[in-house]
Image (cartoon, rainbow, N blue to C red; front, side, top):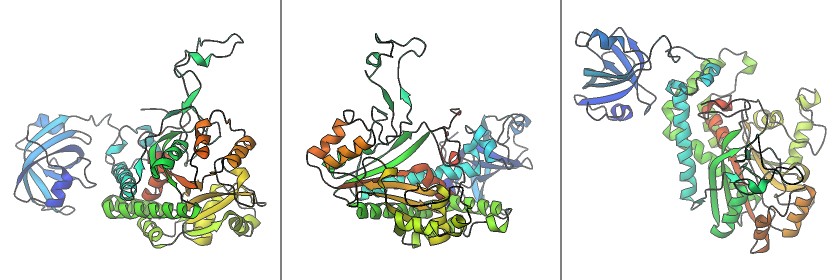
Length: 478
């Protein structure tokens, strides 16, 4: 059979009267005559009309949802409702069958939990086809945004000997035999015999390495996988996820906030322009799901309205101190309806507090900045009050924190003091300290949790539904 034409091209150009070949997977087969075929290039399927008299009974028996087929014929205006064009097939080939007795993705509603258990096949559903096309477009838009602004894409290491966050929740990397590791004379595991000759881990962030490059190239970004060995079973956490981390020399905290807001709006606008069909499907599905909920649990806006709203609004910018005052005086806090009641300055804000600020108080995205230094990382610039650091978080509706960043501490003595306070081993990070010795300058950066961005744009409530193969405690299937 001839080379195929992608279905998105067929639907866009509608070459009526031409003989074309399409190939894809059967979504449905009605009346032994109408086959909906989708090849992943577009949300919509193409209707193939077959003449059952011209096909053998053996071929007809093989046409079931999930089967891979090829069809050649003439594109015509559709006689039925629901599609503008259809393909009248003269030839049909079944490349691969899908036994209806065992194939789990049938043309009916499946729960998200069921589809997570069949993550290797969930790409074939309307919902996950839409999600992963949007994920692709978001990835491209990130590179496009930074490329247009003359940032350089940096590949930071995945295997590292440093803990950028100082939290210690890292995955070990070793080639030593766990049942018979080499030991030192005092009975400890001899790490000098390991592959790298020392303890190594999967990275939690590319930030520290990006700082090195930014202080030579001016502005860089990393976009790669990161790993956290947190035993979290929430709808917001993964053990393996992707991070976008720009670093810019000579940027202060205000420049950092401007860049982050510009980037988020650019990404939202790009998806609205390039993924409208997929977004509309997810919008309609969410609207239908929300209509089953009690009125007080329904969101104020639908998915597309929420995205357009974020584009139109200037993000609110408030200090952590102002946020604490708002939260302490809020009804949920006074009536102790928060799971974590805010009792005073210095509290580490939880998702419920972040969402209150965004969804109830300001009703727009919020940027919080100038956090207490005791609850933030060692590398953040200490303010003149010696109590706060120039950290900033961006909070989004339905998600909470989507970006975290800061102006970095460029003063060598202050940085050393902070590392000592927080028990960060200086000898391990000699290379990080060196850029404060030689040509140090103010610089800033942030991290965007890519899956949280995809979650926000698609309206998915669980982060496991926006990454192809989620890695969570107790789960490394596929």
